[in-house]
Image (cartoon, rainbow, N blue to C red; front, side, top):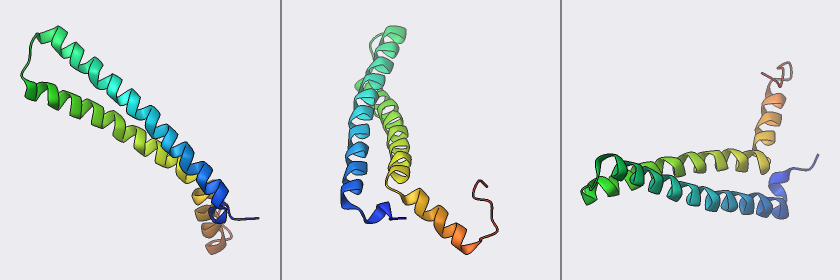
Length: 100
């Protein structure tokens, strides 16, 4: 079985998909931050710029962090890193059930 980690075309595809997911999640995080800011403005009225900046940074940053972590999970699986670790563990412990 060929190792996907050694194939530059496959790695380029995985990284392109990672960047695509980051662009999508960047847009989602901006929308989520603006919706949160609009909700706070509707609920309490005008606000200090520090509250607005903290809301934008906190909500946008949290959504973006979640998106980055999920994209890294997909990158790890799509680039073959998960399979490489699983085969490494199977070689070290041949009696182990790979589903554990």
